[in-house]
Image (tube, rainbow, N blue to C red; front, top):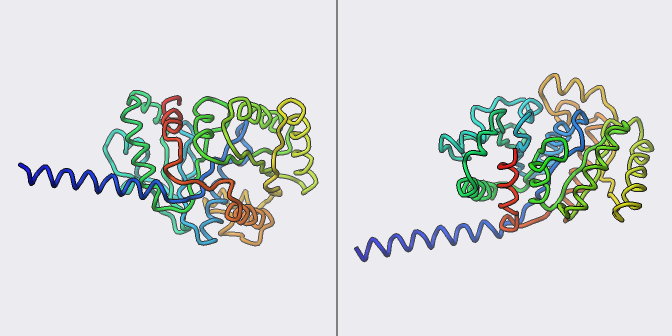
Length: 292
């Protein structure tokens, strides 16, 4: 009996030591969000992930759009399993992760993921702890969030150190981008909120969007947005989406692809998205799943 107790104690200590080691690993972690749909958020998320992979980083995309998950379509993969299978079928993350040839892996969501609400906080907390342990295999974690300002989105934004806010020059997109900026500011959700303007006719148009947002944000929120990059309109982007391949792979010389690579380089150099796995707010991640 004493031997069994010693063995059990040694096992628990080994598990604690491993978890402590994992929690100290430094990664880049950020969420990609938008005030409204149709702005190319997932296109940007996936291509940015692949660009980071091309720069030698191992990337994990976590599809946090649990209602309309489509990162798999842009990546050109057909996941056999989703996050639901980790929850209800006791599949490990190693079993459900979808591999790609781009140094990027995907944890896919499911359109039926709303059933996870019935799990309860304790079970979801265990799931998130397992996810953080699994994430230690990667250099970059990206949460592809749903569009809008619902509580499931804001919970994910609060859990990570940096948020990339995607907007287009369309007035409705600018308005909704400000609405999300306002929520982030008022609820103190994200330490670093950066703007990416997509589908811009020119750099000047991208800067115009930044200036409009900053004028309003400075007046009412006393906050300015950093313009992380302007991605031009691209026929190649449309073709890449239809071919289910990342633009940065099929057309690396496309102006939009080059801008995506520039943004990836900025993320690597900047420390805004840098965090230790143990510092990720696991309770906020649980809330993101609970509030879908």
